Image (cartoon, rainbow, N blue to C red):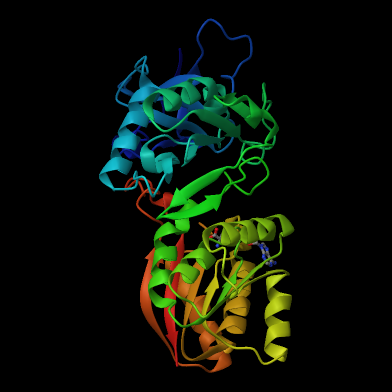
Length: 409
Ligand code: SAH
C-alpha cells in the first residue's frame, strides 16, 4: 500500500479525528511497487503516517487541496468487512433514533463525515437504497458498498447508484456513474412500470431517484415539515420551492385551509400533484403552480394576495465561499418579498441549505429583510438538519441546513 508521510506536527488534527489531510501537510509519498506514475492513483487506498512514522489511519487518496479523506483512524489497513461494519453501525443509530417504523421507511443511512465515511451518502426509500459518491475513492468501492447495504439493511432489495452530478468534475473515472448495482425487480431497470412510494411519518411520497434532484427527495426537512403540520390548522399556506411537496402534505394533514405549492420545475410539480392525489384524494384546497419564485411572489403581491404561513426553502444560493455576498443578497430579497405577504400574526419558515452561509449570516439576511419591509419579527424556532444527518463534532463543516421560524406582527 502507498504510504503518505506528513510534515512535523501535521498529525495533530488527525489525532483529533478531523478526517481530511490537506496536500500542504504532506512531506513525502512512498509509492508501493505497483505504481508506474509518480503519484498515487485518485481513489486509491493509502496509509497515512506522522513524521515519526506513527500510523495515523487509512483513507482515500484524491487530487486537489484535500489529498486524503480518512476512512479509519489508527490502523494501517481496513478490516475486510469495513463497509458492513460502517453500515451496520449507521443502521443501528437510525433504529435508536426511532426512524425505522412501518409508517416511516424513508431515512438517510449514511451522511458522509457525519457517519465517519467521507464522500458517501446513502438514502433509503422503502426497498431501495440510493448511493451517491462525492469522491473517486467511494466510486471505486461502489459495488462493495452496495453489497453491504443489501446485506445489512433488512428492507433494502435494490441499490441504485447516482453520482453523475457529485463526482469531481475533472477526475478520470472508470465505470458507470448511474444505474442499478443490485436489482431484485427486473422492471426497475427502465424506471417504468413501478410505483416508487416511500413513507415519511405516515405520508406516502412518490420518489423518482432516476430523474429527480439529488437522490430523489430532501429527507433533511422531515422534522421541520412536522413542525409546519403543528402550525397549519386553519391557515392559508404558501410553500415556495416546494419540490415534490413535502411541506405541503404535512400542512394539508395539519388542517390548512388552503395550500399553494410553487416550484420552477414542471417535473417536481407533477410529483406534487401525484403526492397530494395519493394522500388526500378528496382535497380541493391545494393548488400547484410551475413558476419562478421571485416572479411568482411579485405577481401575487401585485394581486394583493396574503398568506398566514409561508415556507421558503430555496436551493443553495452559495455553492462556494466566493458567492456568499450574492447569496446573502438573494436571501434578503426573497425573505423581504415573503414577509411582505404575511398577514399580521402570520408565520414564516425560512431556510438556507448553503454550507458556506453560516447561522449568523443567514439570521442577518432575514433581519435585513424584515427591517427593509418594516415589519416587527420575532424568532420562534431555530431549526437545523435532522438526526439522520448528524454533524461529526470533529468536522463542523458538515453543518449546512439552518432555518428560522419567525412570527410576523
Ligand atoms: N422544500 C423541498 C425541497 C426544496 S429544494 C422539500 O421539502 O422537498 C429546492 C427547490 O427549488 C427545487 O425543487 C428546485 O426545482 C426549486 N427552484 C430552484 N430555483 C427556483 C426558482 N427560481 N423558483 C422556484 N423554484 C426554484
